[in-house]
Image (cartoon, rainbow, N blue to C red; front, side, top):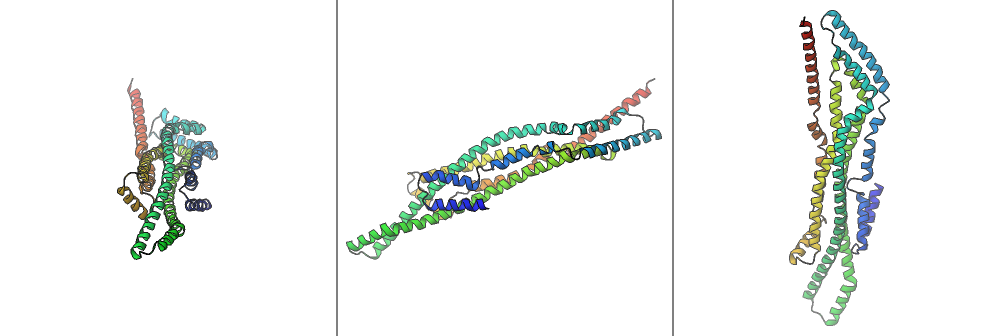
Amino acid sequence: MKKLFTGLSVFLGLSISGFAQSANHDQYKETISYLQGNSIYDRGVMTFFEEMRNYGFAHSDPFMRDAQTLACIFMLIFFSLKCYEMMAGDKKLEIMPLLRPFALVILLMWWPIFCQIIAFPTDLIATKTEVLFGTQNDTNNALRLDRAAYMIEMADQLVEYQAVTEMASEQAQESDKDLGTVVVDGVKGFFSDQILAPIVQMRIRMQTSLQLLATQIIELVAIWILRVCVYIIFMLQIIYSTVLVILGPFSVVASILPAFRDAFTTWIARFVSVNLYVGVAYLILYITGRLQQYALEVEIDKYEYLLSTGGGADRLEKMAWLASNGFLSFGLVIVAFFVSAIAITTVPSISTWIISTSGISSAATTAGRMGSSASKSISRAKLIQP
């Protein structure tokens, strides 16, 4: 909050002190970069998310011994059940189901490597989409600062335009009221040029500066809403993936028992779905970044038209409309930020569309049942043979 209030104070002071000078344009860009951040999505926070993404792989040991202990206990229970079924004559000896617990225990011994292998395809997708997002974000950030320079120049033009218009209107009213002597007109002209004009210009400059400040505050709120939505998605991905990696061995252990046979396949589906958050998020940010680029370019084109010398009365009319609008923005960029914030919240849903947790679990269960049926058929065929 201290940084925010400091940036607003610097911004307002820079605007009032005379933002018409070309040197102040660069200062205004620095103020915007300080107030809104060095990018649309703060680079420091995004770097933090990249570093924390592999946190679970490096800290998966705390519960590993407990999981291995439970695996030994569950293996004894599993073998006891199988022995009882064969002793009772309900089932015959099957080799493959007995090897499954040993395979799961071996997997526990190489758990971090197994998780990295499962996450490799999703990491590959995330890397490619991150490159697209980075290029688009750099373009949008450059356009954002260029638009800020056009906005400060537009504010200066509005100050001059409104000051000239108001002074001309007051002089016209005075001339209609009194057609005094040349001496009186000269005194009035001197008073208007030397005293009244600077006061009027300062008042209009203050009004325009407040409009510019209100515009930047609204844009800052829109940017932070977008950032909060993006940061929540990336933070949820880090939390979910870390919990799945650290506590995932218990899913492997539970799948040893027949009652929880699908626990491991469900874990794989959820882990892949959660790791897809990063790739899907960067892809959505790239798509919405194109929307932001379009909005920034459209507003820059409008500012260039209003600042051009051509256009005549039509340009002055549109400039007057912008001055009376209360804000020095056309609203397209703000709407683009809000649309991007809404779009990024769809990442979990889109990820489950690509990797359905129930779908993978059912498919794996069906495949396991088909394999078991096939092995039973082979064993029966062997018994039938003479």
